[in-house]
Length: 115
Length: 117
Image (cartoon, rainbow over all chains, first blue to last red; front, top):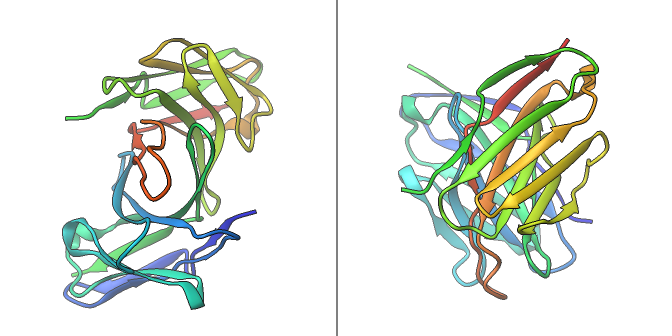
């Protein structure tokens, strides 16, 4: 069965510093990988996705992630943190079924940005 | 602008009550999902529906049922609420997968925080 682990349930960075959120997955087939973001009191929003092709994926708000098959990783980065980046971030892997994509979510990482 | 709405943001119910959580989407999506979100556990799929009146169990269906009478509306039902069902409930919708190598994202509602006392 597929699974997702996120190292660090809570990460704090200073404003302007590099953001690095770690994600590792287990999958028996080539995966589809995602990062979702959840701002306070809101639902989840897709940040970026990897399906096929280029392994470096760019998303919204300056975030990007790199698919590394050999490391089974899909870490999320942003060069310079902004206060508005404070949110919960979920890494996820998709397992395609006949009629829907079953998305398996990691436990989440809460990002705090210190002024 | 795509939209998934949920009937309540906050709900407090007593143990043993029957609870209805409603979700409506305006995107004509075939697929709709109910997730439960708990700290440290991420999101777990309760039920999903791929068409009107069609449903399938997710990973944690025990204690829940669903209803989908119209394409835009998907209801989650707690037949007899218990304290261990206190949680955040998220509804989502999507189009069916277009095929290998492609993906249609799931759109989420704002969530309903349910407290069972």
